[in-house]
Image 1 (spheres, helix red, strand yellow):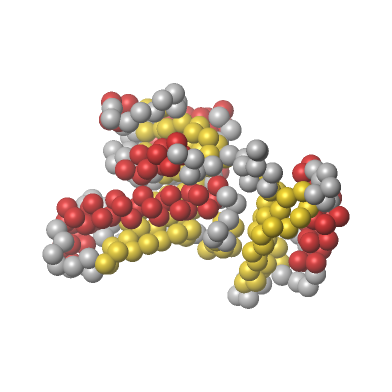
Image 2: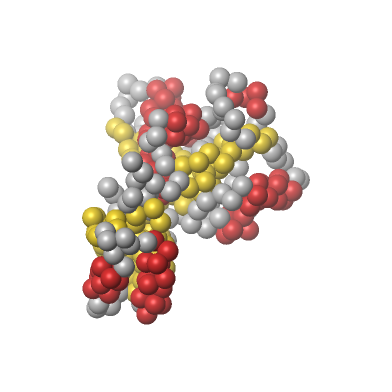
Length: 286
């Protein structure tokens, strides 16, 4: 049986009557609320909600969207409404380190990630990934140098537009996006990196961490902005390490953390559970 569940995600300035107005609109449009999460951020004065629902008595999503527009306008909401089962079109960018790419493809193929693979873009040639089965997924090799960065990003943007990409994943893509491209992808580009930043920048961060005797390593998934590695954080995780760990075991453990942190952030975004709140996010975990 097809999945007949839907969700509404919204944010606006907090004031009385929001929940009542939304619930009334859903009821009058034939919606039956099955799940509801909300958050009142007292620091920013904003209200956030994600409401899961289905239809009874012949309700229709297009009709409900029409009914909801004046409610959203009255409260000046940012909102969207879509079927839970509707996949997003995802483009994965990768460089030499392919552990996050492999994990995303595996989770997608077993049905854990509700997405369509729009393609893989790399600044390394296809031969770098001979052990991967891309099975018809478009692969684009876009080499980049400082002199060709603008032209390469123009090619990348053309791919994003031509394939109607909803979300871009930087799966250990070791290139810094220009402020112009980052702005074009605001709210729909997720990056993953080790959580040592802003410390231990550059090459071999786990070796640097080992040299300093760190006791915690971790990873951060965040939306990309023009501020390098400082975008709104979606998910983080850490793991304790000891003096017994070598730089090589730190790298291995780091790969594991990066995979699971990126997978959670990606799944929550695909499920409409992440809402931007200025420089941070609200995440309604299932």
